[in-house]
Amino acid sequence: MYWFLVILTFLLAGIKTEKPKKYQKVSVIVPAYNEEDTVAQVVEVIKKVSFVDEIIVVNDGSSDNTTEEAEKAGAKVITHETNKGKGEALYTGYKEAECDIIAFIDADIYNLTSKKVEAMIKPILDGDAEITKTKFARESGRVTELTAKPLLNFFFPEISFEQPLSGQFAARKEILKKINFEKDYGVDVGIVIDADVLGISILEVDIGAIQHDMSPLADLNIMANEVVRAIINRANKYGRVTLIDDIGYYIRMSIVGLSLVILGLFTIFFVKFVPLAIAVIITIIGVIVAIYYIIKVIVQSIVIFRKTPGRNVIKPFIKIHFPMIISIIILLLMISTFIGAAHFENGVLSVEPNSRNLIIYADNTPQTSSISVRGPYTVDTAIENESGQIRMPSDAMMTLGVNVNDTMVIDGVEYLINETRPGEQDILRLPIEAKNELSVESGYVIQNSRLKEVFEGTGVIHKYDAGNSTFSENFIITSRDKPSCTYEIFIDNVSKFSSYGIFKENSIYTININENPVEYLNYTNNTFDSNVSEFEYNGHDIKIVFENTNSTSIKQFLRQDQNNFLDINIL
Image (tube, rainbow, N blue to C red; front, side):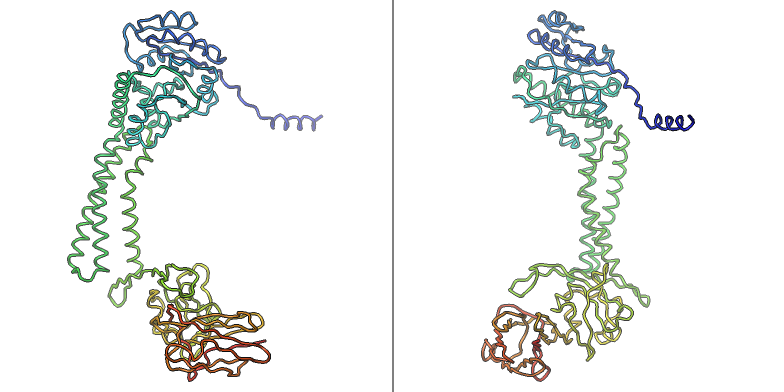
């Protein structure tokens, strides 16, 4: 019995219980001005919606039988003795309504259905929104497209509803207490703006197509004036005019100041013909202007932020401040570059900016990409137990024409080329002996364009494995690009290896096969005696095809008096 009670207790505890939702009453307000032809039909449709508890028709000074038709249909009617405007009619109905949720529906809709009414009220009943407004297909919309949307986009860019002037909407009554009802046609857009600024959730609901009387041009003119007035009044009230006007001016002036700072710094470091004093003066003026107006921007922004009740100004703030933010980011990046290039030694502060190199290939030199950005590279000491290796970034390898597992010969000492470690993209690690021979120290920054000068005269053994044969070409790195020649090796009519480099005029080049010299090539008049060299070795037909191109290179192949140009090993 005891165990049965324990199990029952756990089962009961695991059952989720939800509080029954409190019943929410719904009132529907129908503003009407001389709508005797349609008001009864609208009321009849609304009555079919099961959760509507109250229907109030506000007769806004009609001169026809609007009141009688509405009462016959079963609606409660409140009458204005004179026409006061749509906003006043909505406000009168809202104050009279006794329910928790209030919906506003125009009295001139010919094809209103209960589903359309349900669609605009149900999201509030379900707790998905505090206000719903409708969008629908219709023939008109001139005031929306030509007046409301352009002004909203300018002053309230965060509001992006398809139909901000939709006359049909619903809201919780407690929410409407926070809204300022306009007296006229500005009421719809006024509610949308107030709700947005106050941070009230609004959901735009599609209710399909509706049909109602087209307003004459004179009425549209009045409506447009009232909508414009409502938007401008709220733009003033919520500081959006100041945001666009005053802050806009301060931001433009701060950008001028930041631009002067950037110009001054650029002139100091990169423009030699401008005197240093002038560059410094430009920089100082820019700093003063930038600081003064940035402070103005910050102060005015705080004022507007405090003035906006719902603090819902993030999007317009970003939109207005974006150019200034970009200018500040550019300046900070520039300053960080200079700080990173600063060296303090023996009481002297030296700033030497080092930039990456943009490489664009304009010829047909073999490469993996026609454009790249390389360097600069920072020299560091070789990793422990790697005194026989040089770790080099891939970009540096491309510049020097070498690959991983090639061998560099510096002052007669061979070093294996290896790739950099993860996270060391631009670090060039050299053993102490190699650094001494190349006259560089740890911490030196080498631009990509200077890399060839640092390694000038360094020998390279470039190895390539083609399965049953291997190739080693030997060259020296030069600091200046010179016209080069390409060559391709075929063994038994199969292409095995191709490369390119510089052949020196009036020189002889040796080809070794399995450590035996088998071919001597004479290079004169910028070409070989024969651009196709063919010979046989141990039953293998070997052919080397040379071709002069428009390409350049820093790889100068070793002549006969220096070493072999090419070593072939056939397995």
